[in-house]
Amino acid sequence: MARILSLGSALQDIYLIDHDDLEPTAIGEESIFGKILVGSKVDIDKLSYEVGGGGVNSAISFARHGHEATLMANIAEDAAGEAILRVLDKEGVDTSFINYTTSKATGSSVILLDSKKGERTILTYRGASTKFDDFKASDLDSIQPDYIYITTMRGDIKTLSKFLEKAHEINAKVMFNPGVKELENSNEILKLLKYVNILLVNKQEAMELVPGKTLEELLYHLRNYSETVIITDGPMGGIATNGEEIYRFGIYEDVKMKDATGAGDAFGSGFLAAIASNKSFRRSLVFASANSTSVVTKIGANKGILNGAEDLHPMPIQKL
Picture 1 (cartoon, helix red, strand yellow):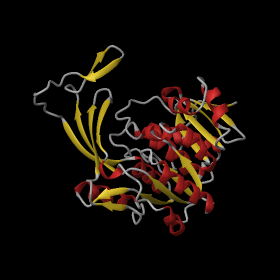
Picture 2: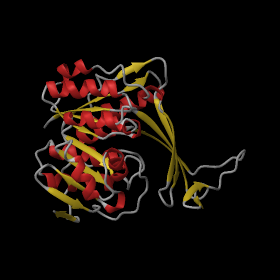
Picture 3: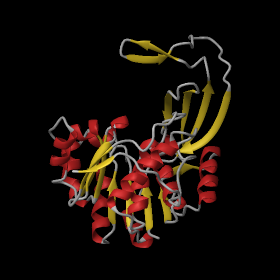
Picture 4: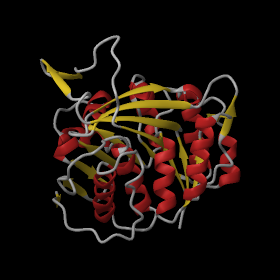
């Protein structure tokens, strides 16, 4: 068992689920939820209250895997914040380093979900999860994590830098899954990758960091910045290296998708959960893919998270 700290957002997800009124309509190469008219009233088939956010989803994944999971996030003392705490307590996540803000409400998302195809549009109020400058890197001395899993910090490079430097000081390993706001400062992120042990990005994100068009080209460049690099490419799978091995992998299983929310978080946290349990690099990639696949078969960003005890079937994965 490892001590793993998750840094990231904590949100309440409110699902509006319908089987016909939210059916997507094609507009050129894009699609919209085209059956809702301005000023109309639409009866929704189902309403579901869930919790999510990169910090919450990853912490739940680590806890279910049997690790000592701690979450550092911002919420408010409101109904949404209470809902998040109830779920985290039930999952066994340490919430003693969650900060309470008074200036903004707990972040929330309203997710319009087409139950036929699993397509969704997310309306997000980030609220308390907008800023991270109240996070204290000095808290790492108390937590003493073996690993730190960092999702987006909304482009707060200053706070990110403090945590990465402190992690290096206390010999904690870092897995980093940057978001859009971080990638807007790609030059600064590249400088900080010397402190990152495991980098997870998708193909488009990798192209914003380094030159290259193919997964192989992107991996070749990124491995100069971080020891372990994983680049995902949606239904095409992905490519990964730990400095010694390189694997090209497909998807774990072709399943009917109910909700894609949290799939990326499940892949990243699933990989780290397995690595922290001393699984091989190859096995950890398989578990990450299986964890992500399981999540998309449920409604909610973390309902389908696995616990590591499952029997996994083979999947397309090739050592290069």
